[in-house]
Image (cartoon, rainbow, N blue to C red; front, side, top):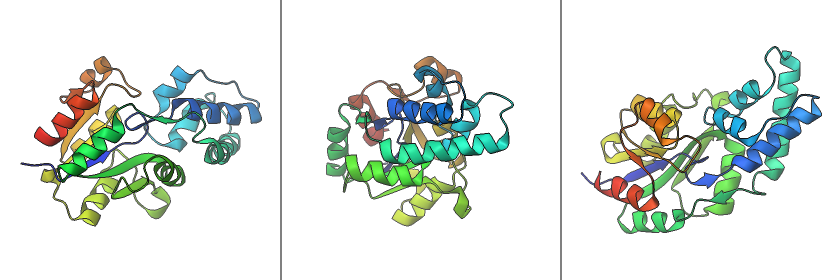
Length: 219
């Protein structure tokens, strides 16, 4: 069965956002008088959304009002600095061209705040994706690994889940695909190692863009 739609995670899958996210976290920590984090620690906290990221970045026992202040500072700083060091992964543009040539549409579903998703997609991938959706829990749409955002994209684009695939780099993306009852592909160039993905139950894991293209189009 041909793939009609490839839905991509954003951070760690199509864009390397780690340095800008780390800088934003540490700006918030410094402004709140808290200790800063190294990039590999921040990497471990990515994938579950910005609230999760800040909750795990502040020291255990941090007062709720301080944590909320850190979150607001993070969002404000990141909104203005989300593309300083962020870069698309090598080969991603060729992959998109090849998928479109094979009549496979593309979309983005991310746990990143929707404001940042729209900014980054517009800057790096204008006119590339049929739809891009970020975290919208304030609208009653649960974030990944709940299937809500994926299901919304499938409905919007009128694609059956049997004809789509979800692509990401983390255990959150694996669980999202499982909860949406659709095929998954996990990439190893993002924020989780291959051994970790295997441990979490990943079955379809790729190491290169060429392998990813083959896995999308040929299953």
